Image (tube, rainbow, N blue to C red; front, side):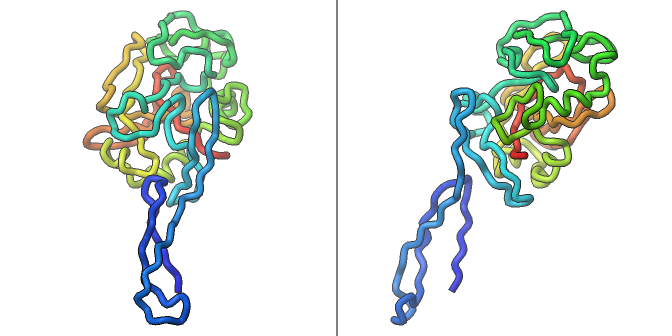
Length: 243
């Protein structure tokens, strides 16, 4: 016969079944181990594991970027990871305690280890409208192999459509944690003063999708969850998808 088992949170489970494998009477107990096939990826000195979506079959990393440990609770600070401004490369600004600056960058690939604060229109970390105002260059830059690629080889920051397809069951921070992605409440970093906000209460993820002068993001609260168009100087977590 055929036997199936559900693998929870990528762990190995042993299922005890009774079957007549050798022609003897049904009732002989046999221990059968079902294992989840995953891959370990070492990236920037951190060992990530891959996870397969039960909905789309897509492969994701098991945690937010720069997270040293797997998520065990929504308020596990060791599982929060870095906070990126939209489309920026890894240059130090993503550290949760990096300094702030009012000086914006002249190109999307310029380096500055400070978090850029801004409350002007358009609210962006580049200098003026002539520098990728529509976000198309940074969409490409955050894809696999792009100029500002922050994910392991073969992985990208997801588009809004990709993230939406695998978060249909997420309605709150509680279901964000119980979902296969296990998203913690890492909070955000504000665009006006660079202060951390709602840490331990809210979860926020960037997508790489540009939305006019803003960019797509996914927000999870204690009583709701939704996608939104956020200003690009906000700081949110990032989860990478294969492709």
